[in-house]
Image 1: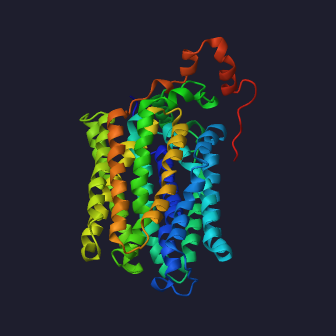
Image 2: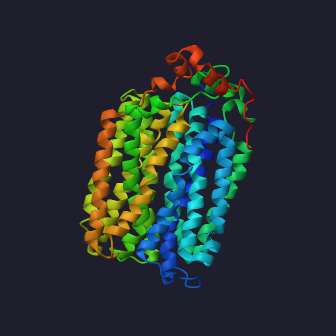
Image 3: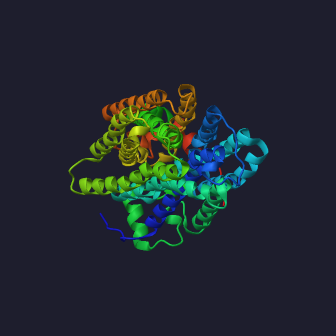
Length: 476
């Protein structure tokens, strides 16, 4: 195997993905702090409007992002294969920034209903992006570095969580108040778009800045055919939808989404209600678990590199081991959290921190598994998985609204955390039994031609290769 340069454009692409995910998650998750600030102005900046929204209305606001997010997941996978990753990610991120900038204006006109509406639009914009991210990693990451580069880019999730919880609380108490949370989120999104426009490329071949040595290293390690970047490989839909490893991945991601969305969306409300913590403390302690998650993501990353380099574990064994830690430790701590009240707030904070911190292993454990199963169709797999997994955050806050009628009722929150714990346990059991990190037979470029006689599949292959017309141009 030819060794590539230690630092190169593949690392620049990884850094761009990291910042993109960070910006997206800030815009997505700052709602948990924003809603608390808007309904309790005395705890932040009383110079801005306060709204008397019920817990049910707040739950609708928190879940509304995902109403739009699930609509465009599959579309994102399709568009990035048709028009190019760079274009789709640029316009999706730009639209998300516009939605952030318009949020205070919408709230002023239509209160919580308008807040839900603009969040739905933001969800539609961001839903295009994650399938593109996984396809981008598949095209830029040599197999030997794929786990490292993929995990590094995904630590933007933890960074975004910390910033959304901690910085949003600080902004809400500042002179620009809760509207400033949306304005800062928009500014970050627009700044990222500028960097992406200059430095991003759909693949190594199209990059203006890559060196010959790195280009040869990437393309030779990926073993692409000569016409790979000029053609669209037909998607083996039936093989994908009947694949046991893919089914296991989808179940695991759905269960993980339930548990994590419970913590992400409900920690500020839980700390205000059950633990009786004011907003100043809440901003820090709400962010603390996700700070642990960010730190632990690098612990997992280093451990994975050591284990794989020393050939102590296969990639499949590594994924299942890390996924077990990421699912079953939060399973146990969530049960414990449900039995605590404000007299034990320090223990509750510690358990939350442990739970969310260890959950960061799910990135290496299962999130990157779409690229393992099919580098050629990673965006399609991610579109399907994310569509299913992100139905869950719609249901989670609505179920919380059904179960929790009083913020301070510890028994009701106990039920919420117990449900999340059970799903964490079941999801990992399915992944342990059926999951795999081996590239599937249906990932092969010639899979359909090998399975179907030439005369029957010829029109499909011709259409996929653009024989009847020139390849579609980028939107940019």
